[in-house]
Length: 158
Image 1: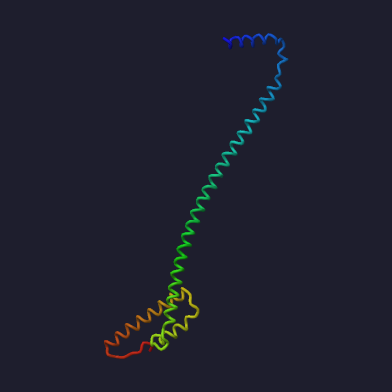
Image 2: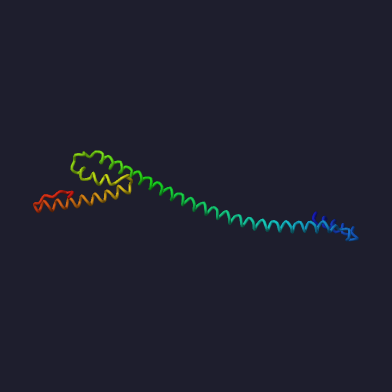
């Protein structure tokens, strides 16, 4: 009921306007223009937000990829470090073995010229020398085995 009374009061106020020129249309038009400008700005902001979200996702993907690469690199570094440690240990053992040889030992006398040719030792040259000397010893063993079976005496370094 109160609502009906309010509507009747509003209708009664319309009778007060005998000239509709008195209604302020300019403020309403200005407010409409402001609202349209705000809608345009919000739409542009929405597009910017979409662009920023896409860029954010790209950065997140890039970070994940970089982290995976870092983890793989750290794993490789650890593996290489462990391999290096093992190889250094092998080198130390081989150096200790070389230092423990008696210079009067016939094996030492046969190896001395080969060792003198090695120069500075590193892991690659040690592997190469190890292979060469291993092959030489196998040949000497085979040769001395053959000479024992044939009854001939031969020198290993001849």
